[in-house]
Length: 121
Ligand SMILES: [Zn+2]
Ligand SMILES: [Zn+2]
Ligand SMILES: [Zn+2]
Image (cartoon, rainbow, N blue to C red; front, side, top):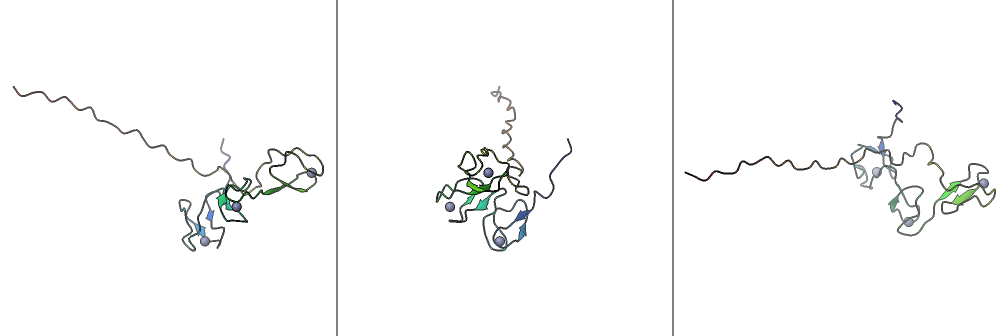
């Protein structure tokens, strides 16, 4: 498998548009927090996943029905207009949720075998 989506490492600031280093956690330009796959809540600016209900203010994002293009809250199990079941809509292209490199688990500490000290003769 050699399919890799391109341009997922660009860490673009949602506030000022500055392209930051992929490892940057805050924008070097304006200091806004950077989280890959996250965007600020339109109501309270809490960083969250685009399709997640805001844990801070309870804002419910809307998703467009792929069938009739009606905007429905993500908490809806189906489209209010056409009844299309949209429980698991794929994220829109360009938003690579979960595409950032996984955290490397810390290596277990290597304990060198300590030879027991022989008591003096
Ligand atoms: Zn910025
Ligand atoms: Zn919010
Ligand atoms: Zn619909």
